[in-house]
Length: 177
View 1 (tube, helix red, strand yellow):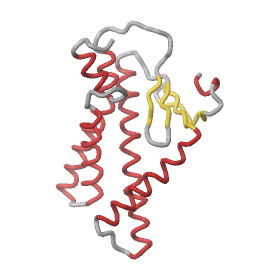
View 2 (cartoon, one colour):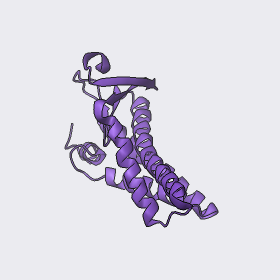
View 3 (cartoon, one colour):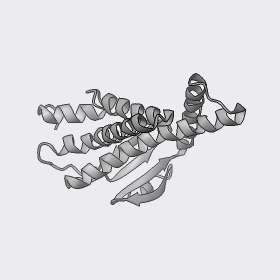
View 4 (cartoon, rainbow, N blue to C red):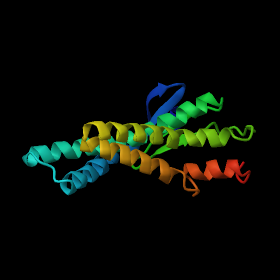
């Protein structure tokens, strides 16, 4: 277990066989997402006095963080489905990191791609669903949540190191093994 060998990490639970760990500075994410939520609330003309603005800032920040959690859950699910599960999700101050078994294994072609596709796929499906609900109910938070999920899914597909796109495109074209 990773948490047992590194005292800088705290174990918060286990979901679908995957350990969820928190790094020491992870609490900074709450501040970062709240500040981003505050900026969005102010830019969108939040109403209800100072309390209303602060409450909307918290809501936007929480929705933004939910996008990261959904992305990680997507990786856990697809990794489990292809038989190469994520050992742990490490929650840091700015992002979540997938941690895999350090023992070298030779997985069949496509396994890395499907593990990497899980996060963007879940974000895309949730984003499209939220945008559909926005069309029906005209709730600005649904537009924000749906748009952010779709944007995060698309950004994740860019083929840069540490992005999901790096593993997806690399595995698809036989570049990264």
